[in-house]
Image: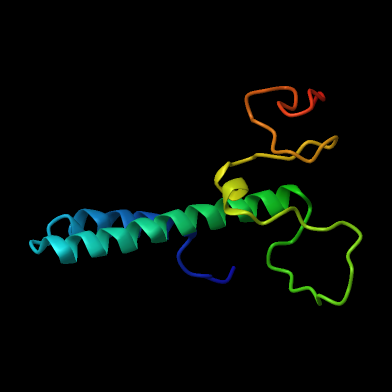
Length: 113
């Protein structure tokens, strides 16, 4: 088996360690700037992980490069950050609105999941 390098979980742990180190920066402006950078990086990493998982759940290979001129039979789900943040969320087959994980029906149209 080929070593592919650190995992996303390793990267997130690294970022969290950097947050702890950044809290020790004495200059408030520099500390706040570094914390903002790290928090944005953590959010993007989480969005990426959730989006990757959602694409896999939809049967789409997240790493497959597709020629935009070629129409696939099944389009990929929308790539909004809001949807990516909500882990495991899906859209209603009836109206296309975002389904809530804890409900067994669509809050927009009432259709059962």
